[in-house]
Image 1 (cartoon, helix red, strand yellow):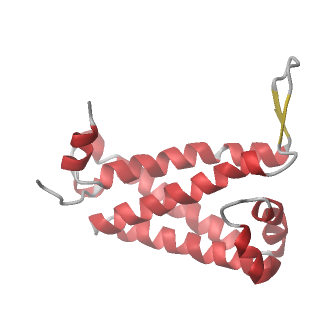
Image 2 (cartoon, rainbow, N blue to C red):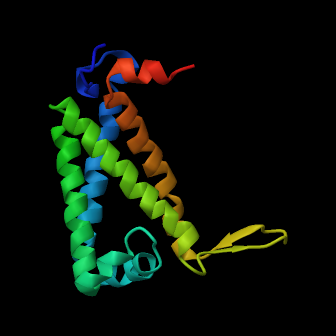
Length: 162
């Protein structure tokens, strides 16, 4: 069984174009990481962190500290994704960390009070600006998932296919 990981930049055909997704995600993670070092961003994410069953423990670092931890993690993911252009294993690790990041972020949609108001009216799902802000993360989650699957050894991906 061949367990060598893959890199989009070394692929052929449509597989090679996945490299664009890698570099877009690097830019996104760098920009998200930079934002976490501003007071405005730290205040903006506090409501999500405090209501999250997954990362509420970050509050032990205080308002700015929890944002700094997330910022450093996002910079780390950007570095792993960039290094993944040269190392298939780092590509897979960075993409997996991206999947986890956006899965946690997407969970805020359900764990933060007031983000979504469900009703049986003509607008069955109404959300505020925070909900609209979070909704984009489902796309970013899918991009990281595609990068992860593209990085995995083909033998593993094929063994999962029906």
